[in-house]
Image (tube, rainbow, N blue to C red; front, side, top):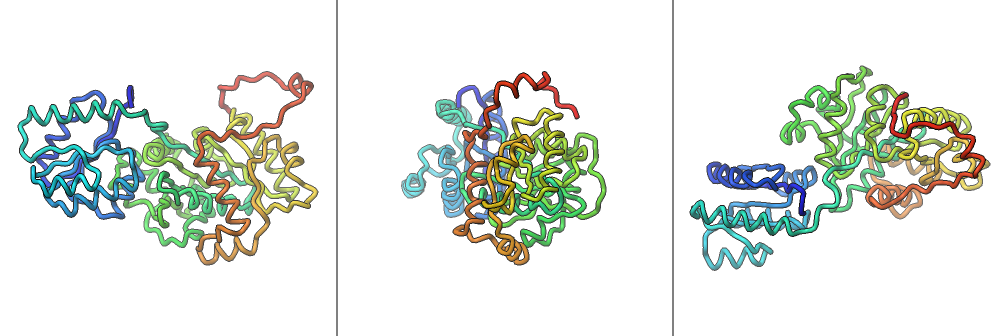
Length: 398
């Protein structure tokens, strides 16, 4: 973890002690984000906290040993690389219980400040000797429909749900379609709060407010949209919201509306991957061509690829033809299982992962989870290269 900041979670029912630990840790230039809890969180609350933030060090007060051990066990399930420093009595039974739970370092209650500083410095040295985290910011993944009814919302819902099933990933699904928001319906939610509230409060977003705004389906966090039809504010709030999402989640899947307004463009520019979803219908492919041209004008060709929904292998509009017409590679296809998808949507249930449809969602989720996956590019012929106009790759203007 050399040359990188590490994040710390402090849990102590003693606010004065927690303040001292925080102040001493903050003296190190290696310390980044610190989060303090004044009570032992339950399993659900702790899991949500660990999904939203990547912690490197847990300092936990063990005066309630049973509660502290429950936290330590839950943390280790979520993050095996996290270093734990216990604050406890120097009692054989207590130390033995902590050792069985995998805790090797401890501080005695009311330890002298010099000793405390030495132990914390040793812990920091141990963290600095660990391998650097592979990623400190999450990815934005955009799902853009070629036209309404292409199935982008359904694919975004099931792909993000499949991605959230792994313990290693913190996944958020954001619904940005203010005219036809589908994610609340697809995930069987009855939300009290919506994306519009998050955008209105970006300057004061914190963990407490965020927990009030989001909905959940199993391990997947969801920020649904309200069907108010109003335009999203064009004042930097979208960028602030995306920045918060990047810091809190490994993957943020954004279900975009059909029209590429200013809010959608901000998401597209921030996205590491853009999935333009179309079907084999001629009108869907035609509109996909138009949207692909817009993406290219924004300088987003390399980030963009196609997902062909309701795919039939014997259709005249095959993968290669669609890729040639649209000018983007096909990342994957989703089989034509309209009846199964409709039943799943009506019931708000998960698609059977053993079916071809379920496997296609799992495949796309696997691509999202694999940072090393490269989108395959069709090699251009020599004449195609010399016929292309020169353009500045780093200029993103429509």
